[in-house]
Length: 409
Image (cartoon, rainbow, N blue to C red; front, side, top):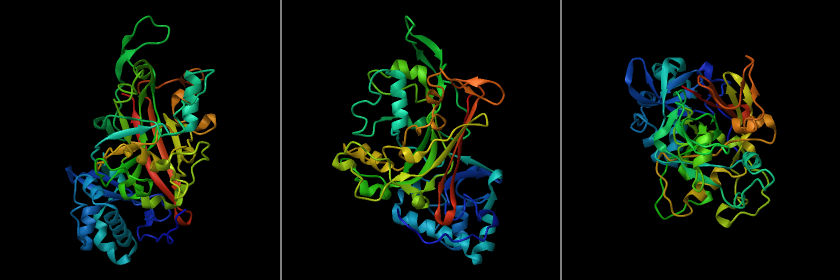
């Protein structure tokens, strides 16, 4: 695991001992009441959002990348710029001499509106949890080997729809499509009856790559800007009827929610852990055994209508984001600024660590009981799902990711 110097303390009281202290400094995009039509790059610090462009100008630093209306210009600037901007932000928020100049650029987080923080170029979703894949294989192929023959040889994934990635809080419209249960003589059309969630972690690409040149494992940190939370909403009945012989399509493409804060990779140095032991030797381009591990110790929580239903542990994921990026480009596919790739459903070994309702209810056979006396197999109209996560930071601190929330409309 990498080590970094002790985390400095901010002059901002609410940033001290906060999951959004100077050891974190996640990026987002916001609008404020004084200029509701102007989107600005912001940095979460304590109970405030720092207007990053205004802060740079007040500190006498270059502000062009931070004066944009999305994170894409900053993301495209590359690793050396990301490091410098983060160092500058840390200095401004810890050096008392900047306090008076920066004070006007701090807005209470409850008084701003948060937006999709970057323009999504492409979206890829993986299937990297052995526990999740085993559970689904057991549900749908009882009596057979739950994992497909290729599962431990490569990170399985599918291409999603970038245009339906939405920010946390955006209502989720129940999708319509074809459905056919095994006992039905013919398919029917209508709203999904088996609307589900998938608790995931997303990785956001900053620096693009050249078409025809794969991105090696060692180049992961040169291309990935940061990490967010993600809910890959899924219509299981539509998915089940359409996905043979090709992968997910309409059952997945109606909405994917992401959290408004992008946590920089540099804030996760102390969260890096080795992935679970692999019992199949990976091919050379996926072999990460000689380098620093890119498993992440993230503690996730899933709440349905305010009730905690699951605590998925991200450290159990079989394939890491580093391997996923290498596999995603090994055929020569290029990266673009704003590419988003997701981990796949995060599930652990215990029933209360499963990251999707299809697992939590074992395909509807074991409904989840809620405190109001109702039960759920899949989502009903009006249900709200909130996914949160934290990670260990330096010196016993906690790195907060905020939340990704959505209500079924």
